[in-house]
Amino acid sequence: MAEADICEEPELDIPDDATLLQVGDAAQNFERCQTLRKLSHIRLYKKRWLMLFAVCLLNSSNAMLWISFAPVADLTAKYLKCSLDTINYLSLVYLVISIPFGFLASWLLDTLGMKYAIIISSWLNMTGSIVRTASSIPFMNPGKSNLVYLFVGQSICAVAQPLVLFVPAKLAAVWFPEHQRATANMIASMSNPFGIFLANILSPVIVSEAKDIPLLHCVYGIPAVVACIVATGGVTLKAPLTPPSVSAVNSTSEPFFAGLKQLMKNKAYIILMICFGSGLGIFTAFSAFLEQIMCFNGYSNFIAGLCGALFIVFGAIGALLCGLYVDRSKKFTETVKICFALTSLTVIAFAVVSNLKKVAPLLAVICSLLGFFGFAIYPIAMELAVECSYPVGEGSSTGLAFISGQIQGLIFMIIFQSLTKPFAVSPESSCGMNQIEIYDWSTATLVMAGICSIGACIFIIFFHTDYKRLKAEEAVERRKEEDELILP
Image (cartoon, rainbow, N blue to C red; front, side, top):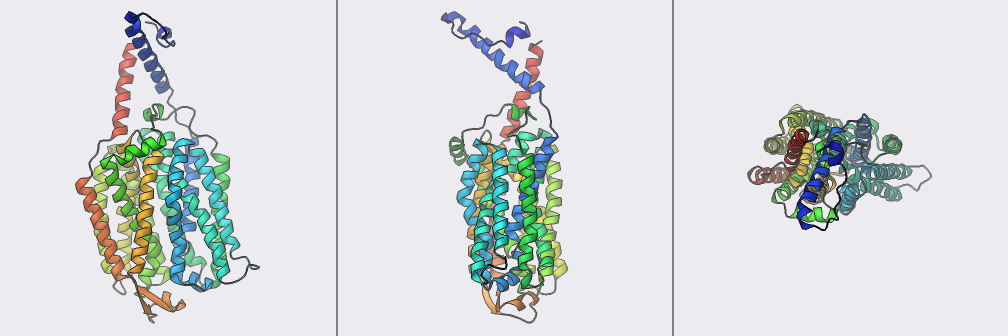
């Protein structure tokens, strides 16, 4: 049969039952021909790197705004004339708001597409940063009234967070080929902790005295404005004109609510969602409380910021190496299980060593290892969530895992704060001289280590899955080879 005959739309209104089989064959040939044509037009666009840059810039900016006060919590409390608990709520508000808006973000991403998710989140992020900056304008009333503006701005930024956090897996699936997906996901995902890294470095440098807090708002507002400009001007398409991979050609994503039902029936996904969420919640609390944990034993804001920076830098290195390895080996499960085990051991080491005095170099090494093993899990687990839940949409599978992390992070932060014990300021506590009392986090860090260890054990023992997306792609590739033999 000639190609023109095969690819011609078959006539289906044939009343003779004897010809129905022929019509079915013709329809199948037509479908195969259409798939073959799409596969022959697979193309990579350079624009994918602009999309990746826009997402990375936006993700970093949003993370900087989230954690900006944590490295200088004591000075921020002094400037705003409030307690440390109130400053912690500036980080906590991200978790509270992102939980309900996370479901909306998942729906928007899988239903309307990346373009709208990225642009909307960029405008929300910029607006929130502007409102934060307004809280320190001189003509505003001093004192606690500034705190209202600050919480409003922080809340607007928090609405943007799930929109941009859920994008990396979708971006990798829609714009990048199969051999670049894990790496693209890693780069986009790690831009969020990179923003945390910048905040840990910049905040102590910018804020040496309480009066420097307004400058902090202005500096962190600049990346938000630039990210909005890049996203609005650069993200013009929902998807490339021609697909970059087999799975992008044969997109079979389930409708949003049907996808959620499938996820809740998927045992492997539920285990991944709970354990990954536990790890994400631990790391959220660790990032927010690191300065306060180290303060009690006499470590300065600079040392705490350095440990936080090393945590992120080595995390990026670990994620990069593991991402490149997984892109080639496809050993998602084995890599995540090994990193989970090593992460739990490192958290235990931190819980013990953080209660010792004058061991800053050892703490720096532990924080580096914690980042290296912990952040390696982050992007690979996102790819694993898509693999074990395919054909559910990437926004739903990764979004629900992040929402689990936000819920557990909120719970953990409340629990850890409740386990702290107030103490009068010690002369050895250089960071505590700006406040009335400091807090002993020894019990909280031990509980943190216990939760991380339990989560690692559950995942290592009980998580098993097939790589459904990879198997679907292999099936299509085999079909392509068969059709190439049949079709002229």
